[in-house]
Image (cartoon, rainbow, N blue to C red; front, side, top):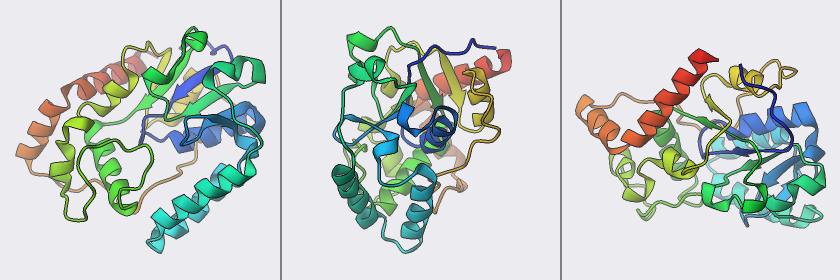
Length: 249
Protein backbone atom coordinates (compact mmCIF):
# COMPACT_ATOMS: atom_id res chain seq x y z
CA UNK A 1 0.00 0.00 0.00
CA UNK A 2 1.36 3.43 -0.92
CA UNK A 3 2.17 5.96 1.78
CA UNK A 4 -0.15 8.91 2.29
CA UNK A 5 0.93 11.58 -0.19
CA UNK A 6 2.45 14.76 1.16
CA UNK A 7 0.41 17.83 0.34
CA UNK A 8 0.25 19.51 -2.01
CA UNK A 9 0.26 17.03 -4.84
CA UNK A 10 -0.73 17.20 -8.49
CA UNK A 11 -3.38 15.02 -10.10
CA UNK A 12 -3.04 14.80 -13.87
CA UNK A 13 -6.55 14.34 -15.23
CA UNK A 14 -6.14 12.64 -18.59
CA UNK A 15 -9.39 13.45 -20.43
CA UNK A 16 -12.10 10.80 -20.12
CA UNK A 17 -10.52 8.96 -17.18
CA UNK A 18 -13.03 9.83 -14.42
CA UNK A 19 -11.24 13.03 -13.39
CA UNK A 20 -14.46 14.89 -12.67
CA UNK A 21 -15.53 12.15 -10.27
CA UNK A 22 -12.16 12.30 -8.53
CA UNK A 23 -12.32 16.08 -8.25
CA UNK A 24 -15.60 15.74 -6.35
CA UNK A 25 -13.92 13.28 -4.01
CA UNK A 26 -10.95 15.58 -3.48
CA UNK A 27 -13.37 18.35 -2.57
CA UNK A 28 -15.09 16.07 -0.06
CA UNK A 29 -11.74 15.15 1.46
CA UNK A 30 -9.96 18.50 1.56
CA UNK A 31 -12.66 21.16 1.13
CA UNK A 32 -13.33 23.21 -2.00
CA UNK A 33 -10.95 26.01 -1.01
CA UNK A 34 -8.00 23.59 -0.97
CA UNK A 35 -8.65 22.00 -4.36
CA UNK A 36 -7.21 23.93 -7.31
CA UNK A 37 -8.76 23.35 -10.71
CA UNK A 38 -7.12 24.06 -14.08
CA UNK A 39 -9.21 26.36 -16.26
CA UNK A 40 -9.23 26.33 -20.08
CA UNK A 41 -6.81 29.28 -20.08
CA UNK A 42 -4.21 27.11 -18.31
CA UNK A 43 -4.58 28.98 -15.02
CA UNK A 44 -5.66 27.54 -11.69
CA UNK A 45 -8.53 28.67 -9.50
CA UNK A 46 -9.75 27.43 -6.14
CA UNK A 47 -12.79 25.24 -6.69
CA UNK A 48 -14.68 27.22 -4.03
CA UNK A 49 -14.59 30.23 -6.36
CA UNK A 50 -16.43 28.55 -9.23
CA UNK A 51 -20.16 29.35 -9.65
CA UNK A 52 -21.29 25.72 -9.49
CA UNK A 53 -20.32 22.89 -7.19
CA UNK A 54 -18.99 19.81 -8.96
CA UNK A 55 -22.07 17.71 -8.27
CA UNK A 56 -24.46 20.58 -9.07
CA UNK A 57 -22.68 21.15 -12.34
CA UNK A 58 -23.02 17.48 -13.19
CA UNK A 59 -26.81 17.63 -12.84
CA UNK A 60 -26.97 20.65 -15.13
CA UNK A 61 -24.61 19.06 -17.62
CA UNK A 62 -26.77 15.93 -17.78
CA UNK A 63 -29.79 18.07 -18.58
CA UNK A 64 -27.86 19.87 -21.32
CA UNK A 65 -26.82 16.53 -22.79
CA UNK A 66 -30.38 15.24 -22.81
CA UNK A 67 -31.49 18.39 -24.62
CA UNK A 68 -28.55 18.20 -27.04
CA UNK A 69 -27.29 21.57 -25.82
CA UNK A 70 -23.86 20.58 -24.55
CA UNK A 71 -21.86 23.05 -26.73
CA UNK A 72 -24.01 25.99 -25.63
CA UNK A 73 -23.92 24.86 -22.02
CA UNK A 74 -20.13 24.53 -21.99
CA UNK A 75 -19.76 28.04 -23.41
CA UNK A 76 -22.13 29.42 -20.77
CA UNK A 77 -20.25 27.76 -17.90
CA UNK A 78 -16.89 29.05 -19.13
CA UNK A 79 -18.25 32.59 -19.28
CA UNK A 80 -19.79 32.31 -15.82
CA UNK A 81 -16.50 30.99 -14.48
CA UNK A 82 -14.65 33.99 -15.87
CA UNK A 83 -17.11 36.35 -14.18
CA UNK A 84 -17.19 34.56 -10.83
CA UNK A 85 -13.69 33.58 -9.79
CA UNK A 86 -11.69 36.14 -7.86
CA UNK A 87 -8.15 35.43 -9.00
CA UNK A 88 -6.17 32.84 -10.88
CA UNK A 89 -2.69 31.54 -10.24
CA UNK A 90 0.02 29.37 -11.72
CA UNK A 91 0.70 25.75 -10.92
CA UNK A 92 4.03 26.83 -9.43
CA UNK A 93 2.14 28.87 -6.79
CA UNK A 94 0.17 26.04 -5.15
CA UNK A 95 2.68 25.55 -2.34
CA UNK A 96 2.08 29.09 -1.07
CA UNK A 97 -1.72 29.01 -1.38
CA UNK A 98 -2.59 26.21 1.05
CA UNK A 99 -3.66 23.95 -1.79
CA UNK A 100 -3.93 20.23 -1.05
CA UNK A 101 -4.26 19.03 -4.65
CA UNK A 102 -4.12 20.72 -8.05
CA UNK A 103 -6.06 18.84 -10.67
CA UNK A 104 -7.13 19.25 -14.26
CA UNK A 105 -5.97 18.55 -17.79
CA UNK A 106 -2.32 19.17 -16.92
CA UNK A 107 0.08 17.72 -19.47
CA UNK A 108 3.58 16.71 -18.46
CA UNK A 109 4.94 19.71 -20.37
CA UNK A 110 2.94 22.06 -18.12
CA UNK A 111 4.54 20.98 -14.83
CA UNK A 112 7.17 23.67 -14.07
CA UNK A 113 10.47 22.97 -12.37
CA UNK A 114 9.28 24.81 -9.24
CA UNK A 115 6.84 21.99 -8.44
CA UNK A 116 8.59 19.11 -10.20
CA UNK A 117 9.46 17.67 -6.77
CA UNK A 118 5.80 17.26 -5.77
CA UNK A 119 4.06 13.89 -5.92
CA UNK A 120 1.95 13.30 -9.01
CA UNK A 121 -1.03 10.99 -9.36
CA UNK A 122 -3.15 10.00 -12.31
CA UNK A 123 -5.79 7.50 -13.35
CA UNK A 124 -5.73 5.57 -16.60
CA UNK A 125 -8.47 3.74 -18.43
CA UNK A 126 -8.83 0.84 -20.82
CA UNK A 127 -7.60 2.53 -24.04
CA UNK A 128 -10.52 1.45 -26.23
CA UNK A 129 -13.08 2.55 -23.63
CA UNK A 130 -11.31 5.88 -23.17
CA UNK A 131 -11.10 6.51 -26.92
CA UNK A 132 -14.80 5.70 -27.37
CA UNK A 133 -15.73 8.08 -24.55
CA UNK A 134 -13.50 10.77 -26.10
CA UNK A 135 -15.15 10.30 -29.49
CA UNK A 136 -18.66 10.31 -28.00
CA UNK A 137 -17.97 13.55 -26.15
CA UNK A 138 -16.45 15.04 -29.31
CA UNK A 139 -19.65 14.25 -31.20
CA UNK A 140 -21.90 15.53 -28.39
CA UNK A 141 -19.97 18.78 -28.10
CA UNK A 142 -19.69 19.22 -31.88
CA UNK A 143 -15.92 19.34 -31.50
CA UNK A 144 -15.91 22.31 -29.10
CA UNK A 145 -13.99 20.80 -26.14
CA UNK A 146 -11.08 23.10 -25.28
CA UNK A 147 -8.86 20.16 -24.32
CA UNK A 148 -9.31 18.19 -27.54
CA UNK A 149 -6.25 18.38 -29.79
CA UNK A 150 -6.99 15.93 -32.58
CA UNK A 151 -6.11 16.66 -36.19
CA UNK A 152 -9.39 15.56 -37.80
CA UNK A 153 -11.85 18.46 -38.35
CA UNK A 154 -15.18 17.91 -36.66
CA UNK A 155 -17.98 16.40 -38.68
CA UNK A 156 -20.93 14.30 -37.65
CA UNK A 157 -19.90 11.95 -40.46
CA UNK A 158 -16.52 11.09 -38.91
CA UNK A 159 -16.67 7.48 -37.75
CA UNK A 160 -15.11 6.21 -34.57
CA UNK A 161 -12.87 3.97 -36.64
CA UNK A 162 -11.41 7.06 -38.36
CA UNK A 163 -11.20 9.01 -35.11
CA UNK A 164 -9.41 6.15 -33.34
CA UNK A 165 -6.53 6.25 -35.82
CA UNK A 166 -5.96 10.00 -35.73
CA UNK A 167 -2.13 10.27 -35.41
CA UNK A 168 -2.53 13.26 -33.07
CA UNK A 169 -4.41 11.03 -30.60
CA UNK A 170 -2.14 7.98 -30.82
CA UNK A 171 -1.14 6.62 -27.39
CA UNK A 172 -3.08 9.49 -25.87
CA UNK A 173 -2.61 8.55 -22.22
CA UNK A 174 1.08 7.73 -22.45
CA UNK A 175 1.78 10.95 -24.32
CA UNK A 176 -0.19 12.96 -21.78
CA UNK A 177 2.05 11.72 -18.98
CA UNK A 178 5.32 11.77 -20.92
CA UNK A 179 8.25 10.87 -18.70
CA UNK A 180 6.60 11.94 -15.42
CA UNK A 181 7.07 9.38 -12.67
CA UNK A 182 3.71 9.17 -10.95
CA UNK A 183 3.65 8.27 -7.27
CA UNK A 184 0.31 6.52 -7.72
CA UNK A 185 -1.47 5.41 -10.90
CA UNK A 186 -5.05 4.26 -10.50
CA UNK A 187 -7.60 2.56 -12.73
CA UNK A 188 -10.78 4.37 -13.75
CA UNK A 189 -12.87 1.27 -13.01
CA UNK A 190 -11.72 1.13 -9.36
CA UNK A 191 -11.58 4.69 -8.04
CA UNK A 192 -12.26 3.71 -4.43
CA UNK A 193 -9.02 1.70 -4.34
CA UNK A 194 -7.14 4.61 -5.88
CA UNK A 195 -8.41 6.99 -3.19
CA UNK A 196 -7.42 4.51 -0.51
CA UNK A 197 -3.95 4.15 -1.97
CA UNK A 198 -3.33 7.92 -1.86
CA UNK A 199 -4.46 7.97 1.75
CA UNK A 200 -7.97 9.41 1.39
CA UNK A 201 -10.03 6.75 3.09
CA UNK A 202 -12.70 9.12 4.45
CA UNK A 203 -14.46 9.21 1.05
CA UNK A 204 -16.45 5.94 1.13
CA UNK A 205 -17.67 5.99 -2.47
CA UNK A 206 -16.55 8.00 -5.47
CA UNK A 207 -19.49 9.53 -7.32
CA UNK A 208 -19.81 8.73 -11.02
CA UNK A 209 -19.94 12.15 -12.67
CA UNK A 210 -19.77 13.53 -16.21
CA UNK A 211 -20.92 10.37 -17.94
CA UNK A 212 -21.94 10.92 -21.55
CA UNK A 213 -25.05 9.74 -23.31
CA UNK A 214 -23.12 7.08 -25.22
CA UNK A 215 -20.75 5.63 -22.63
CA UNK A 216 -21.60 1.96 -23.27
CA UNK A 217 -18.95 0.42 -25.49
CA UNK A 218 -20.47 -1.04 -28.67
CA UNK A 219 -19.34 -4.27 -30.29
CA UNK A 220 -16.41 -3.75 -32.65
CA UNK A 221 -15.06 -5.96 -35.37
CA UNK A 222 -12.16 -8.06 -33.98
CA UNK A 223 -9.94 -6.93 -36.84
CA UNK A 224 -10.49 -3.29 -35.90
CA UNK A 225 -9.76 -4.03 -32.23
CA UNK A 226 -6.50 -5.76 -33.17
CA UNK A 227 -5.40 -2.77 -35.27
CA UNK A 228 -6.44 -0.38 -32.50
CA UNK A 229 -4.38 -2.28 -29.92
CA UNK A 230 -1.32 -2.16 -32.19
CA UNK A 231 -1.77 1.56 -32.93
CA UNK A 232 -2.09 2.39 -29.22
CA UNK A 233 0.42 -0.17 -27.92
CA UNK A 234 2.07 2.26 -25.47
CA UNK A 235 -1.31 3.02 -23.89
CA UNK A 236 -2.00 -0.69 -23.45
CA UNK A 237 1.42 -1.14 -21.84
CA UNK A 238 0.67 1.72 -19.44
CA UNK A 239 -2.74 0.31 -18.62
CA UNK A 240 -1.31 -3.16 -17.98
CA UNK A 241 1.36 -1.70 -15.68
CA UNK A 242 -1.35 0.12 -13.70
CA UNK A 243 -3.36 -3.10 -13.36
CA UNK A 244 -0.32 -4.93 -12.06
CA UNK A 245 0.44 -2.11 -9.63
CA UNK A 246 -3.08 -2.39 -8.21
CA UNK A 247 -2.61 -6.13 -7.65
CA UNK A 248 0.58 -5.44 -5.69
CA UNK A 249 -1.14 -2.72 -3.64
